[in-house]
Each structure stands twice: as C-alpha cells, then as structure tokens.
Length: 317
Image (cartoon, rainbow, N blue to C red; front, side, top):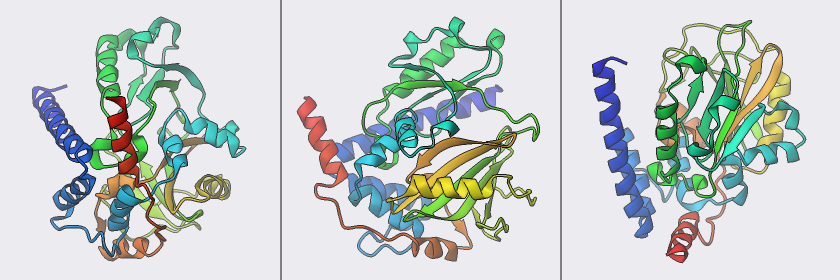
C-alpha cells in the first residue's frame, strides 16, 4: 500500500469512528431519526420526507425507523441467515463454512486451507480474503476482526437489523476459473417479487455495476457505481436464481437477494434490506421514484425497532 493510500485509509477510519460515536449517542438518547436525516442530507443535500416518503431512498429511511421484522435480524447475519436458507429448502446453495468464532483470537490459522475468507457476521463491507497463507498477515487480520467485532454496526447509518448476536465466519474461497472473476447477481425484490438484477463485475479492481430486467435486457440507468460499458451474457441459471429470490424474499416489503453463479452452479451470497443504506443516487433521478413506487410500506411497528434497541441497551446496564 502506498503512503497516500495508507494515509487515506487512516483518515477514513478516523472519520468512521467519529461517525459511529456520534450516531450511537443520537440513537441511544432516543433520536435515531436524526441519524437518518443527517446521513441522507450528506448524501443528497436535502432532507428526506419521512411523513410522506415517495422515492426508493426515502422509503428505505422510513423503514430504518418504523419497519420491524424479527426475521430481518436473522437474515442480515452472515452466519444465522444460513438457517433461514436451509429452512427455505435451499441449503445446497450455501457456500461451505470452515469455522465460526466468537473472537479472532480463537482462529487456528494453521488448520485452515491455503485460501479462505473471513468476515464478521453483523456488518456490511468488511471482509478479509486470504489467497496465500505464506504471505498472509495474520496479526493484522486478528486486529481488524477484533476491532470490527466491537463495533455495533447498526449505529453507522441506522440499520437496526444488524443489532444482535455476532460471530466471525470463515468460508471457502470461491472463484470462477472459467469466467476469470466472481460475478455477483443482486436481485431487487419487492413484496416477494424480483424486479431487477443489480449486476456487479470487475470486483478485483474497481467494481462496476449494471441493471438488467428479468428477461436479461440491460437497462439504461445506473446507481452510484460506474457502469461496465458491456453487455454481459445471460446467466445460465437466471430462471432458477429468480425462483430462489422469490422464495427467500417472501414476506418482506423489500430485500436484495444476492447470488453467485460459479461454473454453472448457484451459490447464495446474502440478504440486504437497505441497499447502499438508502444513500446512493440513481441516474436519472426518476428511477428513485419508480423503484419507490414498488415498495409498499407496512404499518409502523409498535414498539419501533429503535425503541426495542434502546430498551435492550438500558436493561444491560
């Protein structure tokens, strides 16, 4: 890592720590709506309409505050979601798990294969990939994992579903030798119906993304990431992935269901309830409204998820 990249990484880490402490204080003092408003304003330069949300991103902010489904806590976990997938009869598409740990200090690296993947079960974006144990920095991996395990990720952008039990999971390293990269198929599902595939490629360098409809027609709009500039071939198992997305998204107002297709076989990725935290722009902006129309908001939960989290936190003291 260059000096410039290292300094940037340190700066991002400091800013994230400040954000975490600030948001945690807001939430536990009974003002989680301030987290939502501040984060949304930073992303879009305007306040969200939480009284009458219309766009996709506004409705996700509303759901952070007022929607609750106990299953979402289970399904947001990179470990406990495995039970949910098995209960849905899809256990055969789970990536093989090599270990589960309460702390990074429990990991016996010598017992692991030469390549593996480590990640905390309760957050988004943190992952450690080992492609060669002979050059793998075990000390840094342990340090990073233990730091991530201490972070209550629900306070980063108000995503309550990450609140709960947490572990470190170790999975097999997956690769597609035929394609040369791991292609990621993320299905936007609304009330159990897949409507769009958010397709990610070039993850090894600078991730690219494109939208495809359910007939694999490329769409002329984008979300945040740079488009690939390509038209990728229709996946071999598209219809099956759509069917599995329907099964796994059943009963949720909105969830993103992720799969990999590796050498002709489908593997489950994860379930994401707030794509990009509801903080990513669409171009053209009308797509934000079009997708917002597909989210049918439920009645407000009583108690709200944040009222439950605040109560749990007080009971622990």
